[in-house]
Image (cartoon, helix red, strand yellow):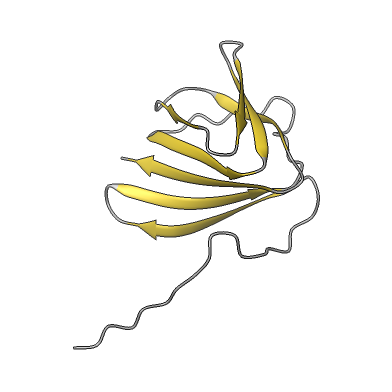
Length: 108
């Protein structure tokens, strides 16, 4: 049986405005969601915090970013940097470069 494969590119161009972010699910099952995030000089709105119900592993593939945590830490990330954000850890995007591409794994 021949399976239909579709090759895609993580760095494919997107049409989003400066200051915005775009999320695209690349793969999902009952245990994991793999997501590409493109950020264009983005920052979370004042007072907004992510507070997710699953662990998140995130890596910066292109560009750079800073994540702010409710406890007061600010983590600077450059290309190749990754970290795990445990479920229930309040965090926000403090800033990103003009063309930042992330890969995020959300683990149930």
